Length: 135
Image (cartoon, rainbow, N blue to C red; front, side, top):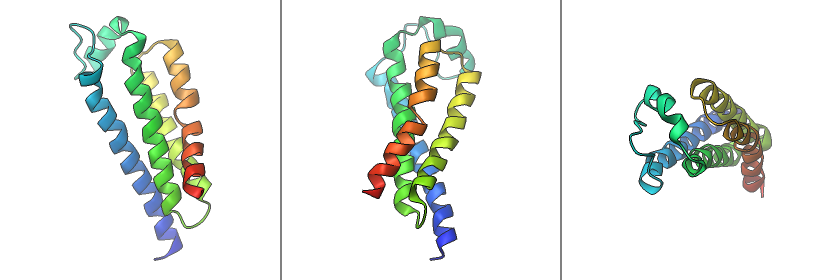
């Protein structure tokens, strides 16, 4: 297979699989750490209106979803890529970072969580995913 095609597939696979991991963790989060009483977490408006009810424990799974989705996506992209493996891992990190910044702008969350999420969950996790794949 052509190197360019394989590298493009690496990015696509990393984004798709990383997103599946992300959504899987978000989907199961409510059954492990239930949302506060009366919170409608099925819509963006419901989340915005009830964000003040969330405690720090309610942010564990969103952070894990973002971090592990990025980590797995970067690992997959780096494993599939034929050249510049770390570059492709970091590309996944940048894509997920853009999504994270968009999420922070659309859904207000505590400042501590926004900073932690943006600083730790994307670029560092992509770097770790790339390093794990290269070994």
